[in-house]
Length: 424
Image 1 (tube, helix red, strand yellow):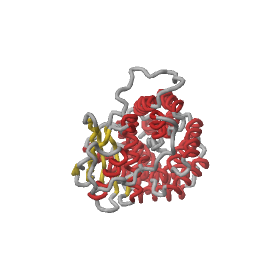
Image 2 (cartoon, rainbow, N blue to C red):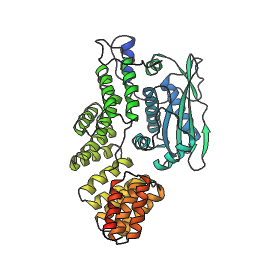
Image 3 (tube, helix red, strand yellow):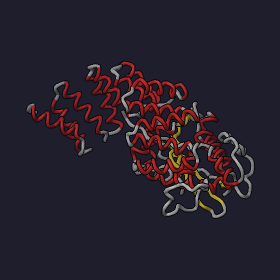
Image 4 (spheres, rainbow, N blue to C red):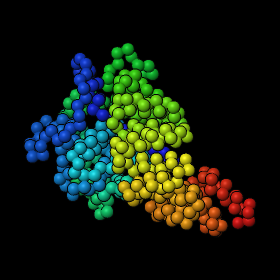
């Protein structure tokens, strides 16, 4: 199964901490902005609020792109992972709610972000953004960043046409440096955060722990990430982002029971969020509990019927149960949604191999390698399919290529040793 990294949604629940820091108590979190400042209204001299600015940026992109353009919001460069995550999540929410453009789910992006090693809050070049867009099946990639103007901030986004490789620069918006922005953009991270939480901690400390934890997560230092997200949750127990990333970090540590526990808490907090079921389904899959995983994938697809990754992963669960026709049906649907999804071709090929249809398997591995010529796993699998047809020369070539791409590829090395053992 293609393991999945996470989508970092830090919902507007952070307003609770803002209000608690400012005065007394916390009201219910507001819904994502739905364009509170009409596009033709003048911008106040001191700038827009963050949510107003996000809504204005969404409007600009909707006005500049044909209806039903498939877009992927890739990254937002800022000093704070917490701030970047909020901007990306809210921009996507506004675009989805307005229903004018087709928005690629952030869950797919998080998978590629981990695989291709680019940062959510760092700079992404056009050269690296375009292949990301193709892998996601997007027509347009959206990237952005924040510039400190002293008393305010400039928030800008650019749209990159994947086929034409042309960047369209948006005018951007000026954002007020109000309490919300100041909370999410701490001026500096101390050299050492406290190992124990004070009796009455500053709510902004949760943001610092999140930022440090996220840096550990991106570096795949999962144990350190779990420790930092746990401290953030000690300060703010309902912080969805810290809980979500901790669940994924537990998956990275192969501590699947704890990942399931965190995902179940997320489901209790937001029962209509498809990604929470996806997280729990993945952890159950990794435990080998395929039926439990399928139940969660079913619910995730009920809530989000256009999730490429969920179809792919449910297909993997069916395949591991030996239900190859159901698996192939899910891979077919994943490929209808994203014809550039090399992993689904590879997985469907393996399902065909399970049915003994080796030529169809090889055809799918060919497609996977056309889309991703450095896909070592597809070379492994195609080599095995060739060996089942006793085409040992092609099998050897594929396993040698897989080993060249990944010198620690034990499977390819063992297969080559087996070939030598039978005189090929």
